[in-house]
Each structure stands twice: as C-alpha cells, then as structure tokens.
Image 1 (cartoon, rainbow, N blue to C red):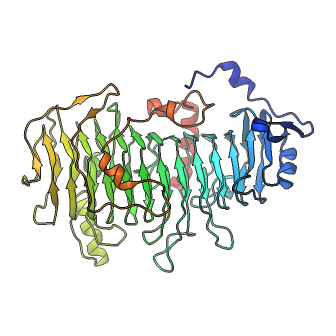
Image 2 (cartoon, rainbow, N blue to C red):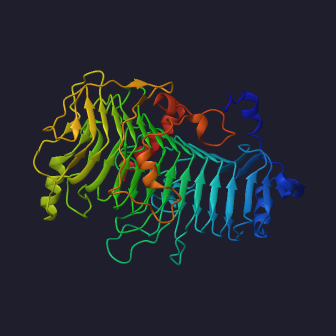
Length: 527
C-alpha cells in the first residue's frame, strides 16, 4: 500500500549528490553493485559496463546528465542502472538519456526540475528518454512537469541507420503534469507517417502498470501514447493495466496508429479525450473501464476508425460526455474505407456493459458533416459504419436520461448483426432488431461501485489472437468483464506514495505550474 510521503523525506532526497569515488558492494540477491554519486562517476561506470553489471545511484541530484548507454547486456544478464533508494536519485536540469545498447534497465529514477534548451527539442523527435536498442526497459520511474521543452518523455526511436527497436517495456512509471507538446510516450517503427513503401515492422513493446495525468493543451498537442504512425504499419504492442486519470492532453488519450495492437485491463477515469483506434486495422480493446466520478468536464470512451477490430468485455459509465464529439461512449467513424478518416466496418462489439452513460452508448455518425466534407474534398467514397456484430452487450440506464442508447441519424440496411443484447432504461434510438431484448431488468452495483451483469455470450466469429502477444484473446472476450477499475495503489512506482501535483485530483494546475504552462502555449501560438 502507498502511504503519505513525509515532508522530511521530501527535503532529504533533494540534496545534491556527493562526489566521492565509486565503490562496489553486495546488492540484492547477491548481485555486485557499483555505487556512484556523481555524473562523472556514473558516466565512467556506464562506459565500462558489462552484461550483468548493476550500477547503483546514491541519493542526490544528477544535474545536467547526458546518459548515453551504448553497451549491451544479455537476456539473462541485463545492464541495470538504478537508484539505490528508488525515487531519491533525481535527473534534473539539461537531461538526455539514450539507451542505444540492448538489454538495459533504467530503474527508480525521478525526472523533475528539468531545464533543457527548448531550441534543441521538438515534437516527434527523440524523447527525454529515447530507447534506440531492443529489449530495453524503463521501470519504477517518475516524470513530473519536467520542463518547457517540447518532446515526449519516452520514445522508442529508430537509429540513424533506420533500425527499429523491438521488445521494449515501460512499466510501473508515473507521468504527471506534462505541460509541453508531443505525446507522453511515442512508439515508433517508421521515421514519420508514410503511405508509401514497406510497412513498419512489428514492435512488440509493452506499456503496463503506469499512471498518466496531464493537462489539456490547445489543438493537436499530443496525448498519452502514440503507437506507430500509419495504418499499413504493424504495431503488435500490448498496453495493459494502466490508469489514465485526467489524461487530458488532447482529444486522443491514446492514438493507436498501427495494426494489431492490444489494449487490455486499462482504466480511463475522468478523461476528456477518447481512446482511439486511429489508423490500422485488426486492433483489440478488452476489459477496459471507461468511467467518470464527477461532472467537472465532458468525458470520453472510445473512438474507432478502421476494420476487423475486437471491442469486447469493456465497461462504460460516463456521467458526462463530450458534446464536441457527439456525446457518446463508443463512436464508430463514418468516412472512406482505408483512408485518413477510415470508415469503421466489420467490427466485433461483444459482451460490453454500457451503464448510466449521460450520452449515447453507441454513436454511428459522429462528426458527420466534417467527414462528408472531407470525402468530397478528397473525392473519396463516403460511407456510414456497416457490417458490425453486436453480441451479448448490455445497455442499461436507471436514471432515464435524455439520450437514447443509439445515435443513428441515417437509418438503413448496413449489414449490422444484433444477437443476444439487452437494453433497458432508455429508448433504443433505432428500429428495434430481434437481437435486442428490451424486457425490464435491474442491475446492481457491487462492493467496488460498478454495475455487474452475468449476461454474456460465447463468441466464435470475429475473434483471433495476435502473433507475439501472450494473451488468449478469445478466452478474454468470452469471459466478460473481470475485475474492477484500477486505482493509484495499483500502478506507478511503488516508492511514490502520493500522486505528484494537483491536476490528477482537481483537474487544475497549481498557480506556479499554470504560469509555466501558459508560457509554453503562448510560444506555440506565436508559431
């Protein structure tokens, strides 16, 4: 359990690292640890690091550190760079971290009080921590309101020769109050968006047990995570067991821009954006919780472009929704097949629970006028979402809101399949198909505060596994909703006892942080 961090502890960890010689001591599990206390000592230790070496950082501030690791570990013997006391080794000032070797682990570092040169960093470039090598890991680290330079906090980045890193992991980290532009995390397998050429190779990265809480920025500012650049590229990344709490950076909490990614067991709490299948077909969202516990802002669920997706065993309960997007929980995009604003079609929507959404449970024509205009401008064929299987879903409302369960302003035969769905408490909003039972029923909340239902169906059509991702997707689809929404205690670094800053809880920045934020956005507007 995470306990309250004392003021004395906060003061003690802020001391600058002493400069005495590196020493070797016996670490955990009999490992030999080389202890360092200064930037120079750490740089020298890295230069001679061999597989299995553990470099321990004593408490203090490692100011203006440029940590470039070119040595490699092995599968069984990583090179480990870690804080001896997690959270008490700070990377501050003009920082850059590049993991260019393989099998390197960065553990327990606190990134804060940064001061990078804003002219040397840009969106869609390398991150504050850039992983160029495969099989690298960033774990148990915290990134808080680092500085005013526009970049991601973490990227997987192609080398100068174009080599794509694979099998990296980002886990048990915290990302809070990022006031700059670009995503928090970018996973890349191409240098930029390209509709031509060979598809980007599968990445096989994993992001898990992390915490995201970042303020809203104007425009297309960069959300929580971007996976790839374009629909023809392969992702095959697993994003699971993360808590997005007021992850508001832009309209896209996650922008999934590649094929065959899996989003499993995440919680989206009070987020003003949506989790987006933006580019790329054959993506999976299973057992996620899209919820709100206040009405401070309008909150979102999922926005889906493309085809052959699985959206199953998810829980949607939003006390407010986003009017600018169409006030929905699940949006299915109208558009042109296989294009920038790709039509949503041939999708499985199964065993989901939509409860007490203050908006439409499913919106079939969001942003309709904009999509029509765009298709006309590009001379593309415009279509409405079609050929979607709705199986075993539950639509429930016990407060008789003003919204219907479905929003479909253009009814007609679109090849929809409705099988064994339940709906009660609001009007359907569509002509009732035989596959929706509207008989009265009542759902109750469990001790975790969420509605529960035993209703689900066994699905055999439209389910599949993803090569390289160790998850039995058909079994998860058919198991229905399992578990409960994640909380702060379930994610992030185990040493970080309180959520940093104010935004995650209040939806507002502290005055001093707001001043810095305003400075960043003012510069952006001038450009």
